[in-house]
Image (tube, rainbow, N blue to C red; front, side, top):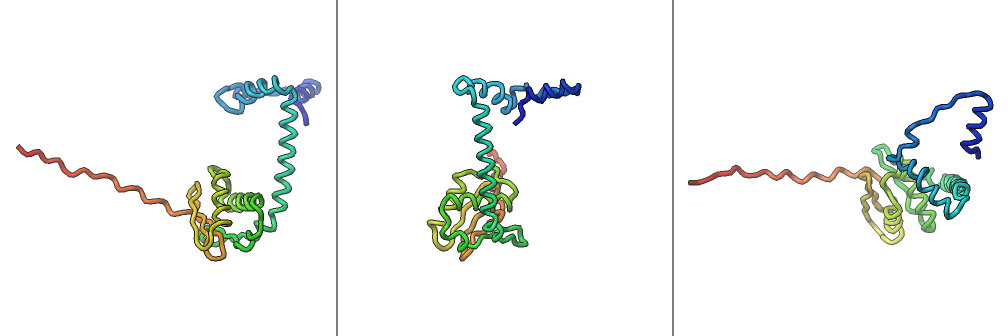
Length: 178
């Protein structure tokens, strides 16, 4: 871990110029309000908050690397079909505990859809409940127009057809009788 002060000291030592990005002071950006307001406030409670957060980030990175490796054999069994859907055999999911199911479904969705924006823990939990609790057919609409369907022996993800817009209200012609 190299601190900013160490980098600047090195640049001074070897005579290299540097550029300061003015946007780093702009309080309209959340990252800067965190850096310039929240972190200093947190330091009043824990002077080592930055190193604690860095350590937590390292632990999370290690945990994420573990999960990625652990889930690889499972995600390899998700089937990407030609019509831009993906499916997971339900027997692959059978017997997996809830935390593993959550991670696996998030990873399958991320690999298929490309990101998890707008898909929160409540969506993943609803999806897990659909697998564990429901029997037979079940459908669940997720954000980003994703449709999850439990059919037969598969959990299938597809892009849901757009919901039709309500018809525009058309006013009848106005007649005034005298």
